[in-house]
Image 1 (cartoon, rainbow, N blue to C red):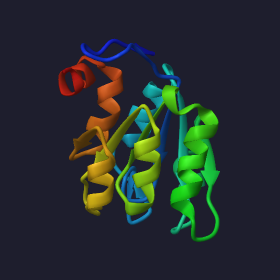
Image 2: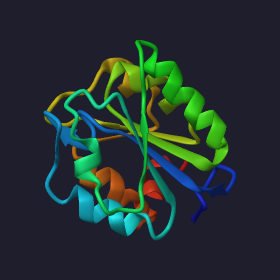
Image 3: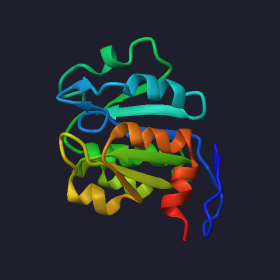
Image 4: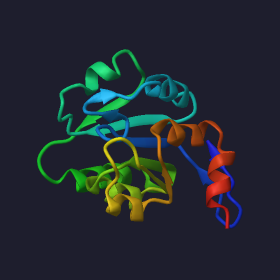
Length: 155
């Protein structure tokens, strides 16, 4: 997916990495409509979900979908998320999250999107993001209609 934003070099987006709890899900339950939006997004980019899977529900949420699930372990999940973005290639990867442990991946990625949803959004994530949305479906829709990204990020 190529995005030409006035005042910036053209972007070639290959990957979008999402936090799970608080971003795609509330209380471990996938938000309504997210599965369908991610399925459509998967036609254009590789979609990865990074999670500690606190509620043990991530595999069930994405069963049968062509989405990569990465389970994080231990306490340093923020650094693990950032390292994952770097391993994919930060200049071709977008990150979407809401928590303090998402701050590093939001900064590392070519575009960081913070989601201020039902579980709130850490100020660290908001300040690290390039864009802030109030609904995860809006974050996904940005890439299904990239003119929305251009409108928010043009100089």
